[in-house]
Length: 299
Image (cartoon, rainbow, N blue to C red; front, side):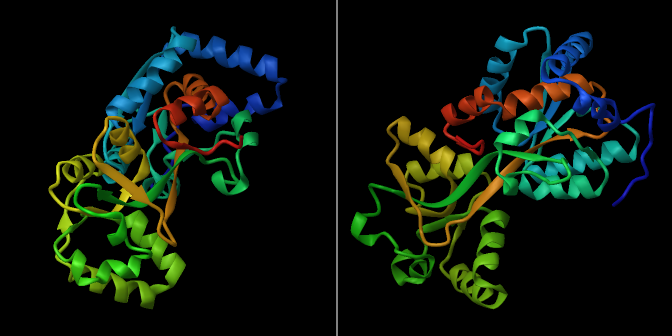
């Protein structure tokens, strides 16, 4: 659904565009002054609440004068909320950290504005939108994960096709909406081969569980033996707490990017720019790495 732009003065994109003409020191000075006047920024995010709180803590240590608020939802729900708000003329979000499957539709709906953060220079070309609508601040690896007490090293699959072995029947879990994993395999294998595999895998009596954190916790508790696709950061976090789980990279293991983007009608555009710059900075990316995510900044 496309909505016509309802401008209350300038869009956030138009407000921030003149920054590109300023010298770095002058640019930062203007952002800081205007962000301090606003005093707050609202972020719509798919990041878990506890992880976002750590990011928020680091941001506020550097910028204590900015009150950072969040709305945390899954990607589809976040997209619906943003779409409904845009349709009713409400402009609440300043920044979207909405996930790879939601950011594109948000751009198409005219809800995301362009922002050319100077930090983008440190990111590979395929990790940022060429027009400036988004930049990926972390990546997920959708890995095969298993309970080390229930699966011996000798039984680990060497590829996805081996999951069709009768040994795995009734022992595997999968998300109720494994879109990133499925889309990547379709891209790698083509429609016909991947569809044949998905149908065969479905006959393995998969246990469907919504939410990667819950699924990882149930796996550690022995509810099932393995999970077909699981975000690596959650597994690493549980491994640090001595949970009996581990993961492997099978051939064609998918990776997906999670973008950060400016809301086109952000009510606090300078504070939004300050937060985006922080997340994409080396300092912000170290926070991402410390939370066991895969940072995307070069170096």
